[in-house]
Image (tube, rainbow, N blue to C red; front, side):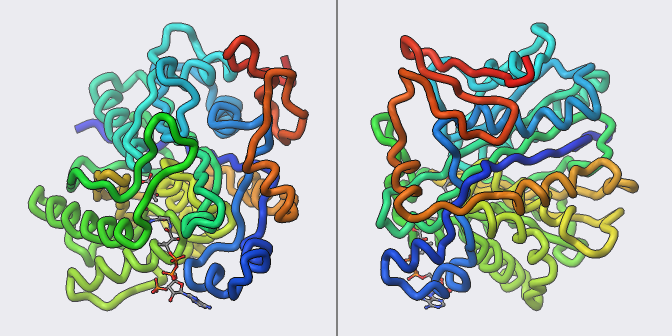
Length: 383
Ligand code: HMG
């Protein structure tokens, strides 16, 4: 069988953030509730000229600059922050990063889960056509009503993965465990900017889906629990990743090994929930924040999307993977950010009319310049 998986992986998050200490102070909450109780420090905030397309293009560009775009004939864009009911966000990215027009571009949706569907579809495709490559993009802005229990778990970011039959970073295993149940734990009707959710119930449905997907993975001939060196989970907030890790250990009657999950939470604590991208940000965080060389390690991934779908699968870290990461650039992206006051956060959260043009605030190469006749006009500063 053809080995398939991730040849390159890159991340982007906006330059601005609001600290959870500022949020806690404003709401008269003990800051430890956020830093320890939910395990988050910062909420990444996109500027008015940034959205899922600009973040995605920023995440893709380092891959294209290093590896080139030869062989890429498919872009799968996973998001739940869609900007259009009809046109796929992937098409804007295809033009901005100058991919061949002989390319299929689509958008996928199932809450935070759809990037995993995209990754699996991409692996199946390149197994059939090993000379082709697929760009899998996960880009989202997690926005909850202000003063709601979800407010502290907001965030924004994009992950781009080049999927091919030459996986230089991680091989994706062929066995998956799947679970779907029709529930209303978190959803966003078309007319709403923010989701409706039952926060506490959603955490329980997430844990249930984890165990059910794990059971299916076992039934399909998956690896035993003790074969896993690391685990990465969907991370709506980092304590959820820790809870998932202890829940899975308990379900297997094994001791809870926090060191198997911790390096994978470093980036997420600083960025917040970025929905489809969160699991892959956790995976990237494992690769880039683990002190030891993970070559040959088996990493278990659990993807969850409210509504709800879950999938558990295994990956293996390839020899020399560190040479194919962008670890220093990612660390700089997270460190070189600007804190905004609570008042400025509220202004950004409210958004603005972009018909007369967006203020130039994005740190990246790509900007949403304006919205004209309901058309989103993106610009490339280098063009
Ligand atoms: P809450 O009501 O803000 O918090 O809701 P809480 O009162 O439950 O406290 C949270 C934790 O902080 C508790 O610990 C407290 O004890 C602790 P736990 O019992 O959980 O171990 N705590 C403190 N710790 C230290 N010092 C203190 C202190 N005070 C309290 N002073 C909730 C939390 C997660 C419900 C909320 O953040 C929320 O509604 N989030 C949005 C929904 C969500 O993230 N759900 C996660 C599962 S569903 C999912 O992941 C899918 C999703 O990504 C969407 C998609 O798929 O598209 C959301």
